[in-house]
Image (spheres, rainbow, N blue to C red):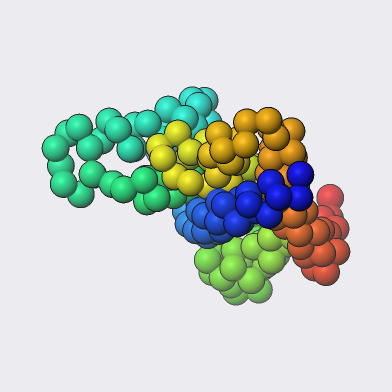
Length: 222
């Protein structure tokens, strides 16, 4: 057993590092895109909100695996050179788009949870609509976004396992390769894989919990 652990761990750690890279880039890109989409759905008017709502429901209502296949296999078949992506950028784009839909809804819901009276009070002091949004509404809304964001990020980290279908050697694929070398140690190898996922996801949850405690929950007046 010790020999298997020693031989397997370098491959699993390499897979974990790939998982970390994909998930971090995805979280950053998906959060930025999702924040923009959520803001536009809130302040962009009915037409913009409806269009972006269709984008969100289309992606959330279909499996992520389909998005990945479309970006990696279908788009390159068009013959357009800039749509012919390598596996890593294809995975990041697909995951980022998927992440953005959840972040956008969190942002929109948090902003709408702040009573209108807050913005109206800010406007009465001479602030513009953008100033009241930036200085009054968003600081309160951000505190409401923190708890659900942590859960979304952990889901995305675990969701990186799906990108193994396009040949990326992330943690799950590294585990699969290890089981081919040591077919009698399936439980041990997949147990090690699960422990590495836990070692990555648990600190993310703790950081989210710390951020929630540090910044505190906002008390919204009725």
